[in-house]
Image (cartoon, rainbow, N blue to C red):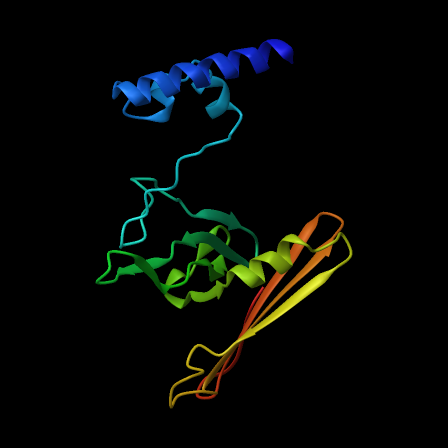
Length: 183
């Protein structure tokens, strides 16, 4: 531990000298321990978030689960930002975890034309992360809640923990179509 401490202190003093002399462009240029710090997952640099919500060229791929009655995908959707006149960024639309469900129409065949979406907010994701082995969660959404079409479509997502994993059920109720579960 003492050796690491001495190494960090010497790197720090070398960095200070390089920064004052204008030789180092980035903090990592002057640090011998840059590899140690980045491997430990500690970063002092912020994320380069553009106004479109992308994180410096990072790509987030959906995760698919295929079962007998249905398939679903989990896809992170980044927040979008708008640039203010001052140059600062403001959240335009919050990020979500988008769940997409498709019913099975045969063995290993799914009807993606009848897919249903359910967007989990960060608060809802947090409650899922805190679920215990015997807990369950249920979320209700009305996609048109703040419009004149409120109440025409209601969605209920139920997640129950069991011995082998989780049972996830989405029930969509449309006033014009009736009840339509996707298990």
